[in-house]
Length: 295
Image: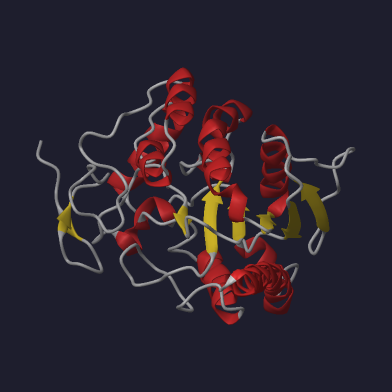
């Protein structure tokens, strides 16, 4: 049976759901030739072999290593929420997005089934994303106050977003095995951008744990015992070369947290403003160094 094509809400181009690679979806990092990981061993092998951020994002956007997550994300893309029934769904893993030499790195849990799994961009398409992008815009880390879909003109400023698990999980709860299968993608992506990073914002306990676990795997000096997560928590970790990175904790902007007042806009603004300030200090320091060496 031929699948029904639907128009992309920004470009109007027709797409199937899930979206085949290389067919013109905005910011699609994959092509028809991009390799596909079918097992955890494939993920490990591919992540280890790719040293370009764009190519890595392409490969992770094609991953099929977790059967439960593949079935869930594609079923959601096929059935669709009624309010989005007129739209195509991305229905593939969500790659990292933003600056490839970021000063600020944001690490969250996973894309939402009818959010990033629909839009093709991490942390977009739902109220949590509205909160996050609104705050990023207020502190100068995003050029628009909203991001609703790939191709909408949004751009991050000195910032990159990544998810610990790249596929939308049922009930927003990946298994430990699924988390560990996906971990090489996160480890490699962070390793490729880490030299410029000076602040990491960890969204929720899941993001906090993933941040500390991943940076420790990269040889960073992470305090033991594991620092306790909390909103506004702040620790400094150090790379093998002595580079200092500040890790900041923030409650996740989930509807449960925002509706109950556990997380307010000023609270989220404060953490992201702190991250922006840390990144700006580094940029100013680098510019001063260049001026000092100028002939």
